Image (tube, rainbow, N blue to C red):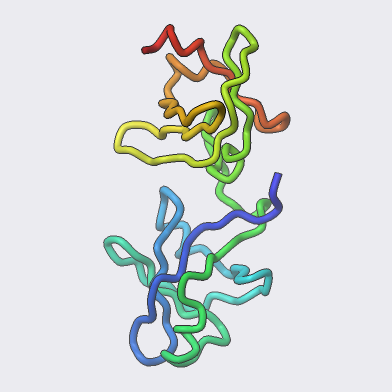
Length: 162
């Protein structure tokens, strides 16, 4: 498992004092209000202030004090140490932990590896590459087991849910 988890991406500057707009990569944007530090390119930075907007979060990050400085961080990811990440309820997983998992069916047939997770309104969809690309809905009827430690996802055989 990775030691750091991305929680947002800097998408723009905000104002003239170096604040940055962040596109959140988390279900709960309120978590940013409690955030004290983040890592950008592996470098620890303190969060000085936070404003929640409808689709973004505006952060004042220590060491970014102008528009020019803020622009240097555009498209960079904000990360937190795994131990400081939010606690997920049972049966929920970080996307970073799902990507790279091998997918097999209950008959033991190898389907491929998850290389992306699409978020839809009702459920996530795992994009799996094997002999061909397959979209697997992340629902209980289809996904029978997720073993993050062994990077293995088990699904019902494809013909059962087509």
